[in-house]
Length: 325
Ligand SMILES: Nc1nc2c(ncn2[C@@H]2O[C@H](COP(=O)(O)OP(=O)(O)OP(=O)(O)O)[C@@H](O)[C@H]2O)c(=O)[nH]1
Ligand SMILES: [Mg+2]
Figure (cartoon, rainbow, N blue to C red):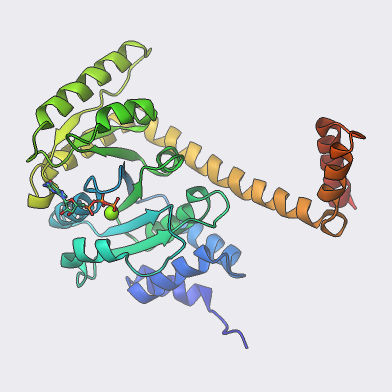
């Protein structure tokens, strides 16, 4: 017998800062439970307040250590802080990943900090699906700041940009990260560069290279643009993190002055709606003619009886008919 869930009560408890209610709500949205729609509708009026900060970068660059340091900095300023550690390569979710548990342990007993690890492998659309919903839960639960950590692999750093108000790209000296960043198009996604592990050789060179790349990038832009600062940190010793917080605040001020925050948040909402709509279309396509429509068209395309465009047209027309009928 499935347990009945009182969504309204859960949300009230989450807004009263009950960590178990918050965790439960995130599980509900993450598992795409039957209550998902009710949860989403009940959260909506309480969202839009949190400052969302994304951290991305290569494995081991120091994202979790930096996140933990930023949590301390924001707590010292009196903010409540939520953390989502998103691992696009892992199918395991729920509790904190082992490394994160160690790195963020100092906050484990702070009731004004909530840390959650999420796995997105296996979710259609990866980050674009589950993470925004979890973000809405934390936003509605009254966290002033939400930090989203994600490993920079493939699409994920691009996706994080549609989620975050401000994106930090972390690099470390000697990892060839600066060059990698340029290649992977990370230059465009970064609002702030952080050269972490500055206690190691090559930090000055990495900073010089990044500053040079930033100045080259700016020449190609028209209109007022944000000059991406390059901040030096030694996250393991807590050094430089107040500079990171200052850079985040400067970026926020700049965005407010240029209408950029609203533009980004609208783009975020748009991507969210689009992802849900596309998932629905895909579901309906799968249901069409008892789930056989696509397979039948595929056979006809394979046999040369139909071209793929005509098959797609027929499939879409079938969807429209099914909706009308
Ligand atoms: N020398 C040095 N080591 C650091 C610094 N910051 C973090 N580390 C170490 O680097 C290792 C990886 O740090 P994490 O914070 O787990 O890195 P991460 O980017 O979150 O790693 P993944 O989540 O696995 O991608 C740990 O052993 C940290 O102690 C630093 O400023 N200097
Ligand atoms: Mg980490």
